[in-house]
Image (cartoon, rainbow, N blue to C red):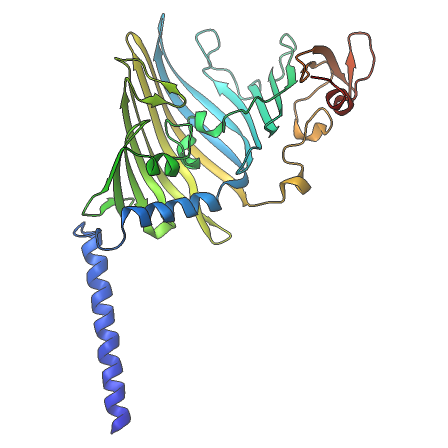
Length: 360
């Protein structure tokens, strides 16, 4: 008899628990009350945690960008991109990009077989490698530059797909921008994004006014971000002149779980900037793949200088012009040939020795 009473009590408690959970889920899904679940500071802490966990990575990507601009003339076009990104979450970064389609008014409908190529590697705060070339076009020679980095910005914040990596119109990671906000608040009701009830934060920051929808079902990543800014606010790292206007949004359309951590894997992003008669709009559809979190970058050689490790630049071909700027600002002109760098006199250059023995 006693066991039967205990069993009945346990069943009653379990049923009541399920009723309470179901009621809470239903109320949040209907947008009735999100304020009781977490404070703004707690939500920002969770957002920071997931961004911290996803900042060291390697991936590949594909992107389609519809753009329009008005400067001296007007143009609309579509670009296609593919490449790979690597970052260690601190100073080092690798950004590779092949671009085809509509580049500008002089280069329209560029086929995928003859794309433009850009590679930028920041080894640390003191060294930078940049290579730009036209692939399969013998009339356009590529040029690789190796020079002091002068504390390059994070690079990913400048891209049309920046929202996937925690940036939108700012040169600081968005969680940092929100923490430094002039005013910040959380809406009392949840709002649906991709059929998930999300916590909504509004903030007035030095980069403009943001609304951020944090997704509790996907690690408190931002499922959606919107931004507006006018003169007096900052655009990336520059102060916007009076009369200028910027807006943007990103919506994460697919999350992926890697090593137990949720991260953005596909997104739609738009950025618009207006300055008098000048206008620019970029609308991006972005997909990430082959994502690896927290790899051993040193073992992989993720940020190695291609002039010493050519595999890090697949387009470093014979005849590529090489321009080296040393820490003392002395410039050396050279050419890449058969895996070696030769100066204008034909002497083979050891980049590491040249760099380390240079007196500033």
